[in-house]
Image (cartoon, rainbow, N blue to C red; front, side):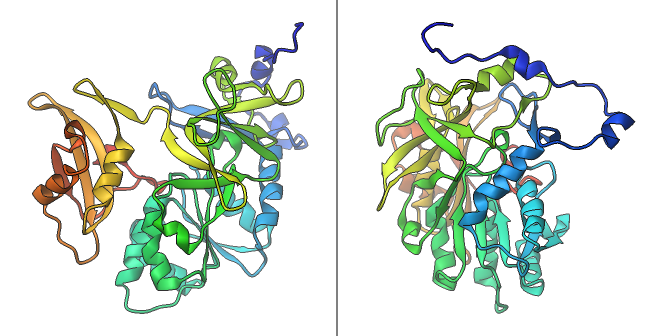
Length: 391
């Protein structure tokens, strides 16, 4: 239409057949735009969404990230994550594309930080990919271990927001010998979007800085009208580039809603609306992205809107607490209650009443947890992410 407005053609999202794969499909030549895999992610309605990723998208990922690392044949990687989690795509195919070796981690070992650390030492693993929740547990196991030398060259974070303050103990023990890299990513944009190499001085920061988009991708922070927001102002993160997947399998309406026309790109270019909130902040040399949580991370409690991340940050300020999670729970007897789950530091003892009293000194009354639950360890999903449902 006239006026140069971006156009999304719904038919484009319906051009792929949902029919079963037959022999003709199995022997047909593979092309870059053929489907490589489908990974299901959770949906806000509880119905999982199947994300269809093409071979071209994965090749783009490997090509776009290659200049950022020095991967080679000498590297040993772990395949730690489930095939149902797209981190496994990176762990397996990036290792093989660079000629490296892959150690498949069995489920029981992946659930035990102590056994996993022993595997890393025994196999001389040099490239480790971890969700922050899993790595924090590995750090504690490493602190408590008597000996053994790790051979890690890279630790790459993904899948969850990284709290840099929890890296301090790693740096105290290992210094900067291992390169720690924070990579924000989304299944719909083929694993990784941004890159930030961490430094020891980052361990004093509370914000989860995710750097800048990797080559071949672009990241915008936009308001609800798709206008760029100023530096330091929060907005929704949008992603453009060759790693954008086809969309959602069999759900053209949802695909059209999340994969929208790129108002800043060439005609026909697409842009993915992530639902994640971020802001630009001025870095030492250039502006970098700061991850500020999900757009739906706020909860309503007794008429008040509460950001759970603020409560978790307050709990982590308390002496002796190594990890913390805040959730709203409801039962028929007590109604809705704000619960804080905490894991003590190694060797520390935590008094729930004392913790409530301490956070009450710097949190508004309605944000103080009604109860503090002390755990030995936070539960993780098979993908290595925090399992909130198990709390």
